[in-house]
Image (cartoon, rainbow, N blue to C red; front, side, top):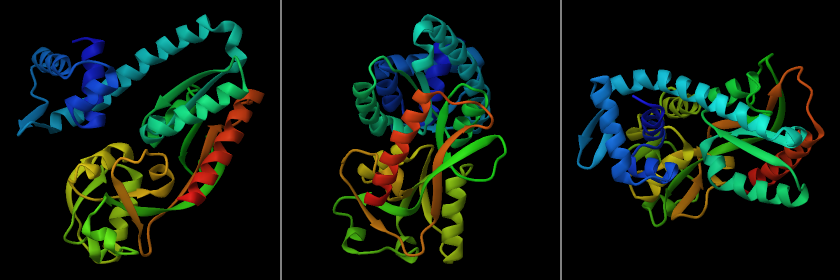
Length: 299
């Protein structure tokens, strides 16, 4: 077992397929499959069920994911530390931002391009993960600021961006696109692609359906809004996502409609409580907050 195999394993668990993992890691799909097979052989465990060209994670894979993520974060932490030492003369201008995978896909490249044009010499490190992972990175000083849900937590200082609504996402031309607004009952018989049950956003969605007396037909569970939208674009179901993240995605064959009495989300930037922030971090945070606020209103 080696680090490359663990990197492949965590990428597949996060993105849902060997193809997506290959694209993310810059490897061929066959190389990804070989490394996964070797990892299973080294561990003596079958981690996935192969069914009609798809990988379905077994309970053993879910259990091992926690350890794998912890190991990868420690390894990446050492690599980041070494890089910071190498960039010593730029230390005051190194800004580490932790965001969900969905924001990192398309939104962050555009924002960073603008910031780098306005601030020559700035160096960025973009970290991705779940909201729990983002908060852990900020608390452990692996990130200067992060994007997450706003709630009471003495470990952080919160800078609220906005409150946004969840919307229903569907492929263009889907029968639901004929409606101006969508109710929970409209979704009762529709196949759905939702975030995993352990996520806080999924709990809000489950409560939304429970409140309306509807049991959704959940066919696929994923671990990021970006991946959910990729499945939706392929016609494998519809999803419910928050509008601020939807607006960060490129147009890839998706349509969306507002929900009646939708779940509401409060998002913002977080910083480690009591930790001084450099002027460059403040500048990045101010630009990011203003930009996301504008996008939230647009959505």
